Image 1 (cartoon, rainbow, N blue to C red):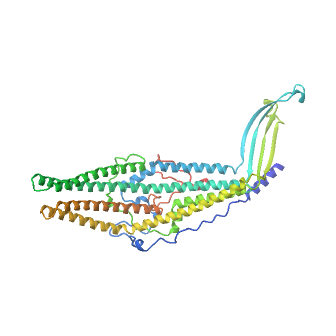
Image 2: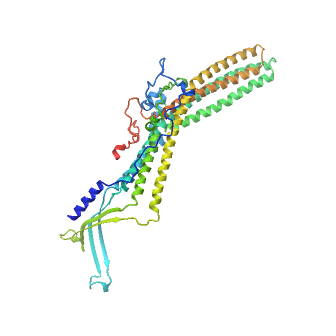
Image 3: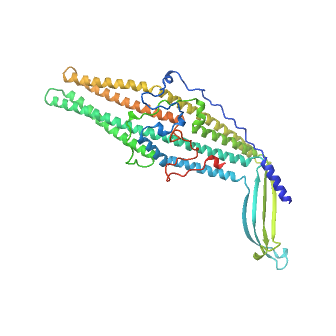
Length: 506
């Protein structure tokens, strides 16, 4: 009866036990309260008109990636990547690992009970034992139990630390998935730009070859100079070299896309759009920097790591206080195997223990100092994550506010260069000008076309990256309920099994 009363008191004390964790206060965001709005930032695209698609004021996190990307081929590639990408699989396995570590830490809150059986033979010297009793045998079967009473919250702080690390890992996986959606889109757009560059290079080669044929005929008939012939030949050879370089870059871009997708590109992919027809959403509102604290998984990841460091301080503080543990066993003892379960063989023991640290060589103090330093590191990393997010969004807004005007100027420049080439060819054919003017015009046009393609690619990849920077890419379709951060996407029965959500591991 006395033992049962002691256990009841211990349980009651444990239920009201304190914790040594410091009260958590979120650090102030070390950025401005709003994104820049003047200068290059002032020309952000407004609501789309003329039949173009619009975000309709929705935040990036509320826009599904199938709604952001209009290209059916790209949508299929993203779907395959989310199912097959190996880095994403590692992220899911990291969640499972962190979840298992959390369960290990949580298990320390509960008693451990083991079943044990033993046989013990003892020999006592003759002069210390009765005659004929030098050898004794003892058999035992029973249950052993032990339980550390967490009066000062040491175990619970370690459990909280493991949970926060688990949640941080889940956010890291969410960030990895969002980044994968963006990376697949960027690489796909790069592949399309390489196709455009190949077409431009081929057109330049065809034009240069035709000019070369004319100058060669003129040289052979004595109406043209060798200088004109060699100048025309340089354009042809340079175009041939560029063609091989572009073909190489195109092949490498496809290899990079295959790596992201995680499998060879299927033959039955839907027909895709050209680079100039992608029709991405251009008017997603930026919101406020404070919105990023909850919309960006990398920031939430950094804060969960900070919470884990905060919990670790509680465990380090609790190490200065006594540890109280209960151990006991109940079973049967007998000098013979057959007598183990006979009446009167029952045996038990109960041993409460309290351990108070007196001298540890400064270990506990050093551990507490270490815990505080680790928390300060996490604070700095959390603040850096916010600053990085602010910079990424601000850069994206600056680019979004300037690319449209830049591309319009480059389109006008390309048209002018095309017209200049036409006029130069006419002047050369009529003997008004030398072939050098044609050569210069061809080079200028090719350069202008390349610059225009590069600007179009940069504009589209900026829109994709800005969508990611604002937290977009987690849901598949607009209006869907977002999955928990630790729940992977499931497009087929063969995809990676879902991990239990944070609510189920608490």
